[in-house]
Length: 149
Image 1 (tube, rainbow, N blue to C red):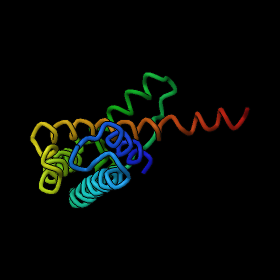
Image 2 (image 1 turned 90 degrees about the vertical axis):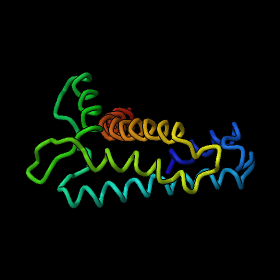
Image 3 (image 1 turned 135 degrees about the vertical axis):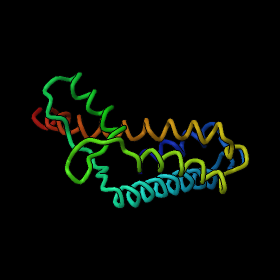
Image 4 (image 1 turned 30 degrees about the horizontal axis):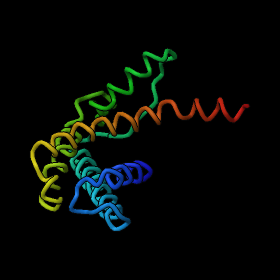
């Protein structure tokens, strides 16, 4: 939800897309657009993943090294565990993130409803997943460190 506020705030600050305007109503439209996009993507990934036995949840790394943990964050953006617990390509995610971004062109402002913009949103979707993984990986350690001080 916080990512949506930041994203909508950024879009409102620079008035992108212009069709929404640089005001609270425009902020609301931008926030709603992001929320519907994330919701559709998550529903697609969960539905397809459930049929195929993919578990999209992030599990923290067992590595002690920073590099090992960062590698795990990146890897888990692209793979998911199957019913047997083995890592496999996250096919449901590969369909859901681009699928949502291209489907949403149907209800986006005309200036955003392009193949180029949908492709950029797809890349940002995977980077967003990676950022979420990084947060889950490192936040418990950061919180623990600050709670002791």
